[in-house]
Image (cartoon, rainbow, N blue to C red; front, side):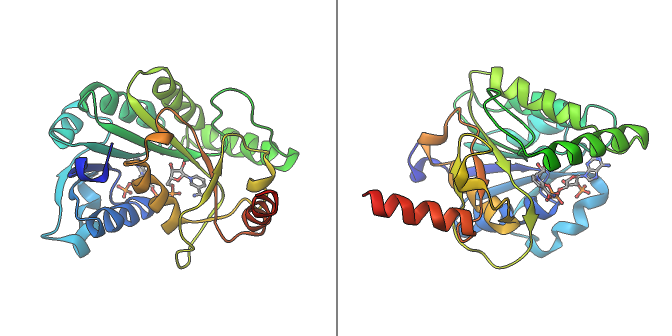
Length: 238
Ligand SMILES: NC(=O)c1ccc[n+]([C@@H]2O[C@H](COP(=O)([O-])OP(=O)(O)OC[C@H]3O[C@@H](n4cnc5c(N)ncnc54)[C@H](OP(=O)(O)O)[C@@H]3O)[C@@H](O)[C@H]2O)c1
């Protein structure tokens, strides 16, 4: 899809940190932006008042999503594992069911999501994930398994999806479009750091990058040591 074909985009989870960066990038590209967020979070979008449309409601409510994605060429969805009410899988399903069949659908998640089982994780990463899953379940706060289920449904769909898998995030000025690879464990990703603003940039750029259709790129900051070493090695080979 050429850039000129993206005119109107929906951002599901627009009020969060990643969501607000995506709103900013989308507005800078001149897209018409519709954002979805919980009613209580609408004030978090005050800085964009008059420049975007807000649909307030739970993102896993099919009716809310149906109204928000109407006429959109692209849908950017923040998948979060919060709560214990299938919030992530409900959100993903609503987007898959109600977005236009030819729309570009871009979803966010973390490195822990694997598409083909080809990812390799450090012992520390696996231990941290196990602890987060267990604590989240015990405290009824986080439901990581449901984010896994959400992505399973996306991977199984025949829509024009991309699942962007973020590394550990940090704040800071943009370093440009992150580097990516198909599998966690690939040397380019070793630094495991991405600026949140650049995660959002990758999501918005994916809307117009057909090479990413039905891909699950794992990303890393462009100026991290591992990404720079990889860029040097590629240059030397060339
Ligand atoms: N944090 C990391 O280090 C990290 C690392 C890798 C990947 N990621 C991925 O990056 C994406 C954004 O993550 P983030 O950590 O940066 O968060 P974020 O952008 O601040 O987004 C949090 C989102 O969760 C919603 N939310 C919070 N509590 C909720 C609840 N109880 N019920 C329903 N929704 C709730 C927020 O909505 P409101 O505005 O309404 O509160 C907001 O849309 C996610 O897909 C995550 O998996 C994060």
